[in-house]
Length: 570
Figure (cartoon, helix red, strand yellow):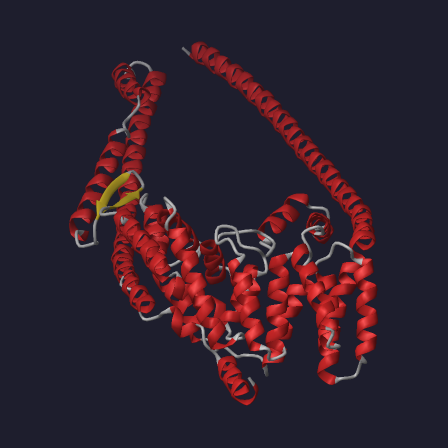
């Protein structure tokens, strides 16, 4: 009996020692694997940093090359501009200088005439050069030469020449001549493809620069343009789409932080966010229009200054021949400005809508109203454009409102963990909470059902019981049997602890998720309320637009000044 126990003990000790050695070997190998993984990870990170640094180096090198190339090319472009069109700039400066010199009577008329003739010779194709001759001849009372110069200027560019003399004669209080030139200029326009300088005329007309008589002609011509455009098939639909895009450009782009629970726990959130943004658009548009019409139009100190500003804008704009080089120069300048980033420079260039673009009159009104910075529109011009376009604006806004209302979700989907539900206005909180609790209880019961005694626990119990029964004649078997039974009860106690832990965790989960659901439903209520309030503002836009008319915004203090001057001298 004793020898058997010694043998068993020796065997167990040897097995235990072997297992310890094996465990140490596994532990050592595990450490080595971890070291290798750490080295691989460090190597990978180092390689990624190296690749990133190399890419950054290549990118910076390319940006520097772009800058150097742009700097080299822009010098050549400017040299070409100076060589081919430098004299154009001098002519522009002379025109403005002559007008200012005449005001203060500091330059002799003979000097003006001599300088003008020199520029006529140096700019054989430029429309402003004969205008300069005509202006100096007019000042020197040389009517025949002035008429010849005007004919030549008209031959070179009838539209610009007509506008130029409309401004000059208006500045010189020659009202009849100004109206005649203005009428000629308007008659040359194609409402489908308007020239750049029409912006100057509309700005002057809106600010009352040309007086009430000229204003009446402008109104009639503009009405003709609009009627002509309306005759085109699809024009109304095009205007509708155009204004729709313009109004939608004002949509708020900032992320709405007032509904964090809906954003996280509602799959419907993208629709909710877009619908609320669409409803807020009403207030944004209303405030935008309200701010424009609330601004007082402050005219220049006198008509001469106002016309000077318009003349300066006209004569300082680049001629058609220069535009390709000027555009290229601007592109290169933007590349240099953006430190070689061609993509960013192109975006900036594309966003700069310069006045040399030919657009329809309807598109021009939209640009004036919604993009004043890009179109260089004054407040007065904005007001006039909105008043002329109010019917198109109302139609587009009504369409936006209808589309947004259709897209408002009826049901707001909810998703918390594995539970899913929906609500319309948060009034079904009680039933949703019960549904959530039932879902969590079902998950809890399923989790608990998986916590059972293992086969080894039951085997230990059965084997232990048998060993105890047989252990009355063998002390070793008795000990083994007691250990087996103890192992079983230890396992059962562990299972109960696991179940208790699951119960506790799910009880907390029910409380936490119920609070989340309540908060989400509260936000759903707030969302519905905010949407309703914002959507009410749709009516304010129609009421506002209905109360304005073009006639209200084509008059200013310049008209009063013009009337006074006319009584005195014309």
